[in-house]
Image (cartoon, rainbow, N blue to C red):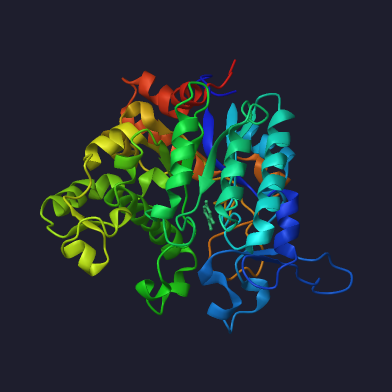
Length: 425
Ligand code: 5CU
């Protein structure tokens, strides 16, 4: 039994529901699941390889055999019993599950809305049959026409979903042009309205997938497997996406919009001061949503009206609109997160099923020489604790120290319980 019985809530934990696994298996280009033949007729087939990251694609690795592309995956990516077992092992009271990247971003417009409804219904059903242990973030059909996206948002906010769906997960590309795209206004507006309803947090969970262009990491990137894209590409992607939202005045137009940034906000806590200062010293701000309105230099350049930059300071937006997860693997990271958004707005997460144990005590498969550092889970792994999880729990405890138990309890569970109105015994 845990030394400290106070509730732990995991707000950053993913699933590829079985239907999505079938979708990935049916594809011949990333994102895809590669089913490999058994090495010999009397041996079982090896675990399928998940190829989602742009840097894992066969075209980026022409000389890598398919058996070493991406990473091996097991049932922990899609099985609810595995998820519950993982939660039990780590004393997690409640999880808020989200579809893992790259969500529905790659689907043609006509397939997107039916898939969103299918996944959201599946998530709702998983939650409804979990005796309150699992809730979910839904997903939007971003490649579908705007009306379909807004319809799905209404569905997620409806009483049918309300007890189960606590928010929605969104990549950084939005409708294709990023989260500072003025075309997202109707979605942010509807979301802000739903969020303002007292019993419907519908938090917008902003999560990376695309990283940075591989050229940034140089020709030796693959020598360290997934380290550069995951350790730096992911958090910097989130940092850039959020900063672009702020710069574009999204939080001026939607001052009630509440967002949750993955991986402790990436570099946002460390760079917020510098970003703020650059804004103060910048003269050339234009507001694209005011295109053609000023009649001056901005209009001439087609960039919109000249403005002074975001009206609400980054500091204010961080304190009033932003939640950060505590997926930072270090006390310093948790402290920085708390410093910029406040201790009531930092929420524990595991990033399950990513980062399973590797090597001793884990299940790194034989011959998996891809350097990606990814084992694949099995029932066995679910029985022993994952270092990636214990590191994050320790980081929260060390961030505050034994004098400040209330803050530890808050980040590990209390903050999420309050925010999402969770019914936790
Ligand atoms: O290891 C990874 O690729 C990932 C991923 O794809 N998504 C995520 O949330 N964490 C890690």
